[in-house]
Image (cartoon, rainbow, N blue to C red; front, side, top):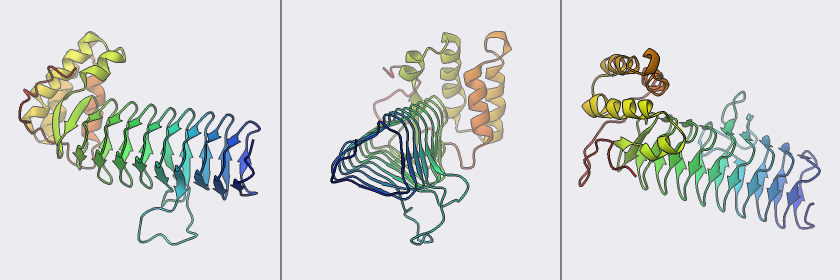
Length: 276
């Protein structure tokens, strides 16, 4: 169903049951999967592919030009790919890639709340939550099930690990490892205990991640030492291996930027306890 006030480019490919509400504009090669809904006043610009059952609220704007001085109108781009079952709320924005081979990408079941933003060339995993006003700069990578709380900001080229959590207003300018929490300006604070427990992590893995935070990340050691100590802890896992610690090792080893440092926060013990 397409509302009579909507404007749809002939180049668009729409599944039969797509709903396009009043005032929406679709321009260029936009492909909308089955069950996609544009409520009202949504702007989509191709190249853009949207997965099944994704829903856009009024004012959402996806696929528009990057905020990059070198990009000129009509530039070649791989555009944006949005996964299935995503929720793109009012005023949320996702910008097209500056690259021609790799699009800006949102995984499945991403929840972008009001006025959140994903910059050009960013790669966002599955089940990620961007709370109101959360901002991802260009080339940011966010792992599955990470949460960026309200008004948190991630600097360009940074990585946020799987199940990581940034508290409200946090500023992330270094890489945030998996399973850990950031707060304030670029400061590790604790372990995302709630996220790990709710998602069925083994008690042994949770215990080892807490030890890793206390014994490795709080020490702010050089990266080579950090990797060695994490590898040693991983070998203490059940059967001589811990999937969670192995993931931490790979993240730290492959970092393009420095690891976010630990900084004690006033009023917190920051030992991985009491995070619920």
